[in-house]
Length: 392
Ligand SMILES: [Zn+2]
Picture 1 (cartoon, protein in one colour):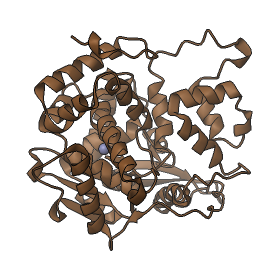
Picture 2 (picture 1 turned 60 degrees about the horizontal axis):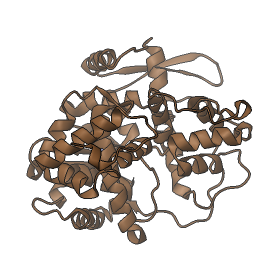
Picture 3 (picture 1 turned 90 degrees about the vertical axis):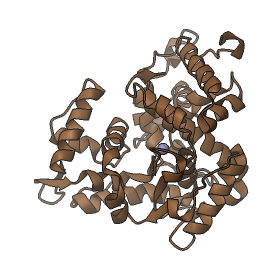
């Protein structure tokens, strides 16, 4: 699953917060950074300049240098505008807001984004070029990881508009997709409004699952918006399918063997969304089954299934994007950044081949070693890397 909104990775930091705080004794008190959530709020507020160097360093550790640079440089109130920020990255975020605002209108608009800088945009998938991109991406994924067997053929890749996307989401997968959306709501998604409207606050994933199942049963979420003119609160409803289609750009149905799988892509789409779903398409059933065991356990502060399915898929997707950057263009959404970093920290101490053998081939020895590597890394201080010789 791939979310549409590039600011998705900001929200990941709030989950990351559940991991033990990093040791700060070397930092002088006046430089002690504020907690990452507060720093994030400030970075995305009207006054990012209030961030001190120590706060920015802390943010960079939490969500990565690029994410922080992008956040500060793409800020609507920022005077300078980084030419590295693709025009359509900002546009896409605005589109996401518009989709919901069309649904929940009338709502107060946020300050408009700064004018798009004149840079060549990353390529996008649309109806006219979708099959060409499917071929390119499938060939690239197969070449990168040496894959053979059933391919992501025309019949297994569906490129659709938002309404069709909503209609075609597999009903059996809806609870899982909604759970991921509620655990990690992108800004502008309306999720917080929905929770307020339903008076929900959750202490555990099980309760959230129950809430989602109840709302799927009645096919509706309520949300309240304030009319900017009359100041009256207006209650509106959105179906679970509409909510997912407004926020998710791609899905992969990976139950069963590869020949029976498919991907669903909402167009227009960024190339990396298709690459991410293509990597899901090629996951081995044994790796996927492993990820589905105890899905809600926390590993490194992340939900276990999300780390294994999304973290590994995006980790491999980044490699494909890097290898093919001259054709596929730059990363735009950078989905699941904190998960990718966590996967990288486990894989770097093993071997790349071990991770590939586990994910794509379902090699039982590689899976077993990867499981142990994750387990021993989890028991170790987050700043330390566990060398391969420590895995029995
Ligand atoms: Zn995914």
